[in-house]
Length: 158
Image (cartoon, rainbow, N blue to C red):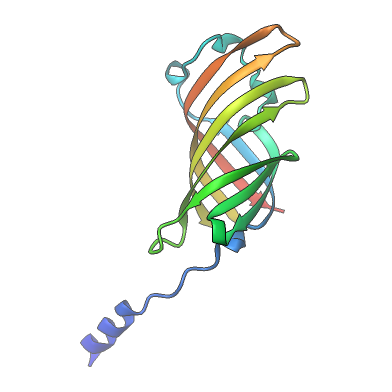
């Protein structure tokens, strides 16, 4: 009887919560975790690090769009659409990837691709990401590219 109960319990997995649970505003802290020597690109010495959403605190708004398997992402008020992938048998892990043009308050322009492997932690979301960018900073008269293999991000629901 005990064996039958264990078999029945192991065969009954609960359904995953809806991914709309990510909807909301988040205080987001992000930083580069790759060693400096693994960061590559052209003119990296002039890259405007302090201005970027992946380097420090920013405000993210997320809205899952189920029928399209996308997430509307707003970073400091700038809208993007992310591709969303979660395997049906894994309720906590998912990937997000989005690209676009990010404009800093100081006038630099960034044509970027951000890809993250994420996970739900109750009202928080965490993960690791990679980032590629072709940038132009008119104020400094500099431009270049950058490829960051890994960073860490933590989103805390507000």
